[in-house]
Length: 421
Image 1 (tube, rainbow, N blue to C red):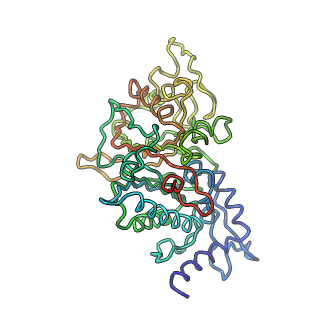
Image 2 (image 1 turned 135 degrees about the vertical axis):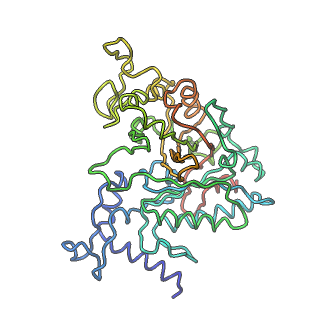
Image 3 (image 1 turned 90 degrees about the vertical axis):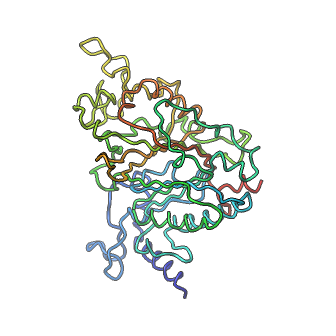
């Protein structure tokens, strides 16, 4: 038996320890993966241990996400606690043939890692962990199509995003030929996948930029809750839900639209948004809440109710002014204020140290998904750019737009319908 076989067997043995609780782990993951309960096996239920007396994987570690499917994983998958975003440019001289070979390698590696197994030549970084809800998602930037001789098949939805007045974009950390999103509920599992993707790129592609993010860890709250960002605000309350009757129409590209390789896919807008936390934290609580239009304590609208209560945009206060100010972030970004424009926000927070001036380089790795960015992200961002009270406390520093094709069928690799048509 080879070293690779031993690594693979070790990870599968750990998954086996989860036993019948593995199915419960899948359910917990689908619900947000918030409650951590021991994955038990055999007669060890009282002790909470697996075979041989070793600790069993929790449901957090045993939860796996399918690689194959109608959509790529990592779009509607519940937010993971760790994430990496990485962009590549094809190497000089690399074209369609090299790109296809690279996507084959990446897809094969992602499938193995997402199942909790170890690929050949594994580094052993995640040897003791289960799949931990790992997802690896792949997308194509606008320039990819020129470099692979596929410019005629580039979707109009990949036309460059318009310039916004508040942008301070660094081109070295923006765009790219290829984009990979990695998420997992364990930091080592996420890094392990990042390293594998980077190694698989070989001579075909070079890293253009890479960003690291995080969210609240699974089990850190007593019940499932919407995540908070680094400003302390509940972030994501107004997200469209898969149970909404128009969810697929808003988020995923339908079949029969002339770009069949994108059927079941989505468009990802990626923005590195730095938060000016020193300025924000100087605001008193009531001022912060008026900037957002929601209570900081529970995310409920200033007009009352709970987090999920609809905004009452017509409600006036005793002074005759709107309770939710005209320039409040929640008012300006509300779908009803933007002709129904909606996008699925799935961000990570980031912190990249303290600058020479003593201010934190921290904020949000904003990732949003939609069937058409010109009808999702663009109209909302235009309105925010014109009068959002939050704009004084954030800075858009990097940007990217990527076409993320539908999920691969069994036996396919991501992007095969484009690259081999």
